[in-house]
Length: 416
Image (cartoon, rainbow, N blue to C red):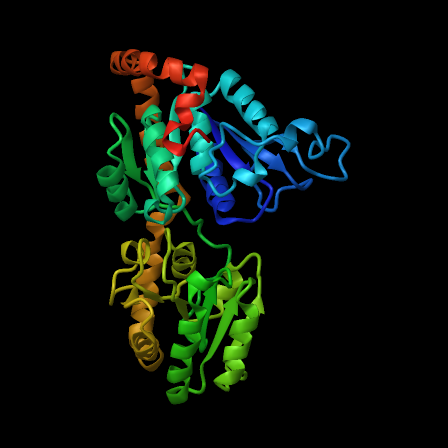
């Protein structure tokens, strides 16, 4: 198969980029794979797409490049196809509408894959007849605005499939949007086996990593660790990442007198070596769309203490087997879970081994095989009588809509 991913930017360092490359690299072992980046902001991608993956861009935003297009008059005009309800809309323009449309109208791919709602809308509306159309959800339906949900309900029936990263979110898509004829599948993000020796479980460090953002609730982790370290002063906490919460967290550490036990380490790439120095992973978010850091820690041999927030931790951690779950926002429960692992070396070692085994199900080879099965079925359906019948049914209904464009935005007050 010729597989084509469409991504906002393949040159940055976000989680969607990393998971897209993990999947693309695996699929490229047996298929022709490309990643099409709408924007290009730097000369080289931050993450390596892999030797078998072609990366190209549609709009050059490198200011020092001879091909810089950020000052083009067309780029100053607002996007109409990329929906206003997608938070990235201000970045998009009439220029991106045209470039994406040209790409999708001429693609030779057997299947095109979008990686955010706005790009899924482009794929649904503008992909030429022939390729299968798959939209990925990297966040959650529950966190989308009402306006964005209306856009999804209006547009997604023209996709062949939607994938979510958790079964909980897939259930939401099936029950809330009820997309006729669209296959909704839960397929998790993948995490490769780390290139470091896993933790031996003896280092007295709790490790956390991620954006220093309010939803990550590092204040809960710091307060919980503060209570635990009063009993076990031989342990420390390292938090890796950067973000707008740094100042507030730094002040909280000082306020609680934990400056000799809790350390804001800044960002680290790659992070695997830092996980392996610890013995317990910690995630205290109020919301997770999946929980990549949980899987990363487990793949490095750390049992993880996590809050049982929507949607991912409960689908990754087997409570009491390879980690511990605590109620969201409950400082006492998180502290008790940390102490349980700190105080019981044998339990920590058992959970460490279990984490290594259970997290292997998120290996790119396993996740890629599930994607390959899905995509093969979609491509076969596209070429079969079932799809032709569906296309004839939907084609007339959408022909006038696409030609006039106005109906595309009817559910949003006449705007994209």
